[in-house]
Length: 107
Image (cartoon, rainbow, N blue to C red; front, side):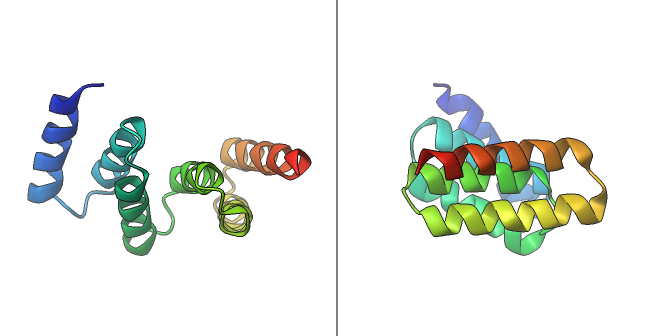
């Protein structure tokens, strides 16, 4: 893992905290370090600041899966599916739908 990349992203975040991509990237880096608490914190911040950031929903739902929070994962998939339909983002729609179906079949 590359802590210097995380530190650089945190520098960007501290100077441009409202940038959705930076918030997302920080969350992913924390996830890579298995700092799931911090990843969740940044994903939820992104959801609050930019709920139309479609890439968030797949990754947040997967994190909820990792944390064994089934209902939150399924709700997040549903929120992402609704947004993908609204945005007419068929790639995101397909990915979210497949991920949700696979997760539901695991039970």
